Amino acid sequence: MTYNKVMLDKTTCQVLKILEDNGHEAYLVGGSVRDHLLKRASSDLDITTDAKPSEMIKIFKDYKVIPTGLKHGTITLIIDKRNYEITTYRHDDNYYKHRFPKSVSFISDVKEDVKRRDFTINGLLMDKNEKIYDHVGGLKDLNNKIIKAIGDPDKRFKEDALRILRAIRFKAVLNFTIEENTQKALLENKSLLKFISKERYTHELLLILNSKHPENLLTYQTVFKELFDYDYDERIKDTKEIPFKLALLFKRHPEELTKLALSKKEIKALSELVENSDVQSDEVIAVFSRIQNKDLYLKYLSFLKREELIKAYRLNKDYIVNNATLALDYASLKDKDIDIKALKEELIELIQTKKLKNDKQDIKKYLERCYNLK
Image (cartoon, rainbow, N blue to C red; front, side, top):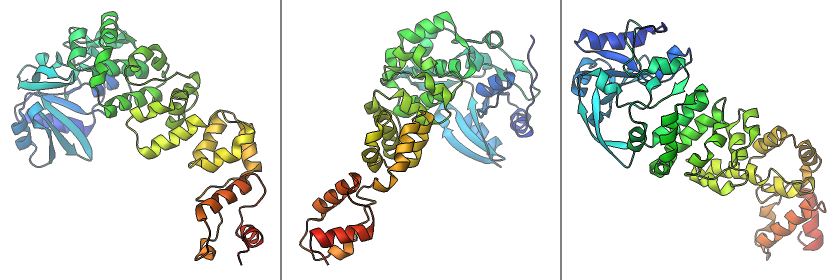
């Protein structure tokens, strides 16, 4: 077998060696092996071993170990500020909600362990001597730039529906092709995406938007529309700003933003971009008066090449006002028989129509003249 030689860092070699020195097999597996072979940076540090969780805890007793998922055979080992997810060889026994195995059986054969994984390019193993082990045809698919399910693709997607989005993400990030039968099963099982959590599918969406090929959101729009509605915009490729990408994606469907795992603050900021991207120059005072994140909105207008709006903003800056920025001296109104709410609305309208300046002295003079307030 031929394989590309890669370099293992000292800490990773140390982890693999510790397991082997204690009589166990140990391999890097998944994304880190795939990305090393592709000469890409990787944050995945997954290790598979025949050591049981209790044995791993004992072996690494001198290090920080987090029992991440003991019933699934996984611990997280922290060495040199790096996290290693180490999992016992296992067989997954049935799945519930098309996402999680009901139970797992620990096994001793790594060849059987890799068969439970999603795609052949993620089923490659690497030992501490940098040797690659391929039991699923992953090297051939990696060389041919193909994303292919391990075993029966229909079964793989029915087990874990998140794999549908992962396949599309790998296609977008790696610029690979999805193998014909895998693609067929992916489309046939798209309705299972309703079982995926908001956090998970938002994560996959953002990774695709950040990739060099976000146009896959157009190619697989029927798949993603099982989760939310949107219209792909080619300009998404022209910016690295995630807020701008999302604003373009949901420009006709701002209500769909609530279907993403975003904070209320983030949804508010994005909604402002979406709902105010097509305003006209004569609306600039009213628009900027209600916009909370003006700096982000101005950057977005610049990206959209709406220079006329930016110019209008600069020319009318003195008349942009809301409740928070109104230069009203509230202390002077204490104990006065006056409807504060109605007064604020009146003053804001006068300022926005350029009949009054948002200045404490100007407002004071207006109150003295019109309300006889001294």
